[in-house]
Length: 440
Image 1 (cartoon, helix red, strand yellow):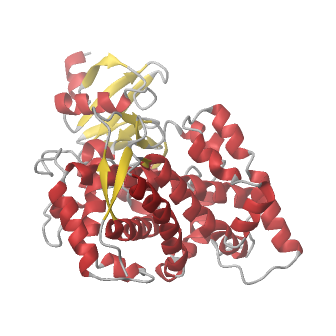
Image 2 (cartoon, helix red, strand yellow):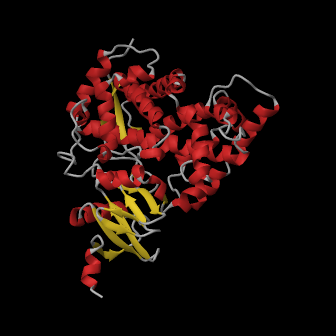
């Protein structure tokens, strides 16, 4: 057998043996291997006893996520996420996933998101009131915690509506605050988080028992959703899994993205000044709706560029079902495939000055890069169902806060990356809010 010929029929093999995607230094390794091996390489995984393929070419990304998506299931790390989220749409597969997705999708229609505008704006104004007190005293804010609490409040109000206040009163605190107070994402956290299932069920069962009507929130929408084929509602277990998925997916990713956004703005005063100028130019928006915030073009560009540099979902994993071909190489069934938006978003072939924060690169008509060189919300049928809501929520926050404050970063030293379930800073970031002109 010609072993050299066999080796040439496969992508290059990294000299290290490592369970890539499961180690704390996986992101660092993926950047290093990308620089050395390019768009496609293999890594032998001792824990899995097989080669893992890693891709970074938008053509291969499109094939895995879009063109041949039916040939790929979720990959490594799925068991860990399933412990946390059960069989919600982030982890479910096949026909079950398709039915659930179709039942949930209407809740994220643009006209539904518009109806959350007053709630999102009010939550930001309450948060800014606290920032005004810190600004008056000149004291730093733990901005990482502030944003985590804000996005958690917004997602919980969107899920539970009026029952959010009732839940707070009943428990004397926010029982879901565990997601902001517990930084670790281990089995102990998963156990405590899954225990919140009881609260979801209590609220849902009370609504059914008392035949409560008039609720406008995600829980009500999911409770009334029906399978298109059978007409059946979600089971209680399905309902709980999807609600807990919305809590996790709708909270930590948005908080992390905003955390990075404020840091990047603090390091780039010209971009910060341009953002301030835009939010001032539009005047007072008493209840900024979805379409209006989408017209804040530079604000949108700032968010897009922050998501390019620090995508919360830094790793996407898939596993082939049948044989396929990637990069001209034959891919065997059952092969783990990894792709990292963090790496792809820094590909020098598609991004000029890839390490530099340049929001204007997202100006309309200013892109010749391939569609799948930018995937902060994944792509294809499994793209993030809450993308529009997340972008809206971030735009409202930047509009509201940037009209009132300049956030001055007060810590020294480099910021490390914590690449676990989401991409977070290794330490909380502190900022002093400095008052700007008070809006009318």
